[in-house]
Length: 265
Image (cartoon, rainbow, N blue to C red; front, side):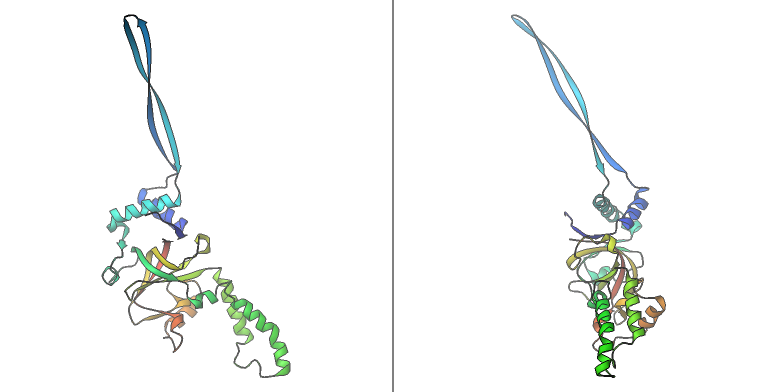
């Protein structure tokens, strides 16, 4: 299948391929030999004598080792030796993902999306602009109504939220719902490797970094391995269950957290 990559972590890809092949290829060279016949005729009537020969030309073609080529080799190596690579091609999630271990390399088809709560906390999500606007209008609101700020986040909370958005460094979190299954996968994306919009029907390939069972909830901004918020706050959030109406801010198990290598169609 010809693949269109929406996300490809080329640094991790190079590490995986290098480990399996014992190094990285700088280039690949192929050679072929083309032959050409030459014949000279001597007319000594009534007999014509032919003197034949052949000439060879060597043709050399060099190919750069692109990330796309590396990915195809990794896929072939993973499929040919699943014990070494921990490879699982997920066809039946209820069976294939049961008891899956940390470090397993999986490829799964899913419906991917970036949760709204995560979008809001990314630098271009609009939260910082909204807070700046609030800072600008609050002094005027207080002139007309001293109680105008009641129920709104205080200055300390507003500054903390701005600081959190700045700490995200453009990173986003993608979640994938598996068809006809309760299982979901999630992983953090580095903006350096995003090639196109990652939402929609896709295939995700990555290594399992964490898992949690059905009935357990993890906050979207505090998923295992995520760097979206500080560790102490993440642990505090993990001990809480979602309140009514806040379910969309959490990810319920059974679910896997992945170090995402590629998202493609």
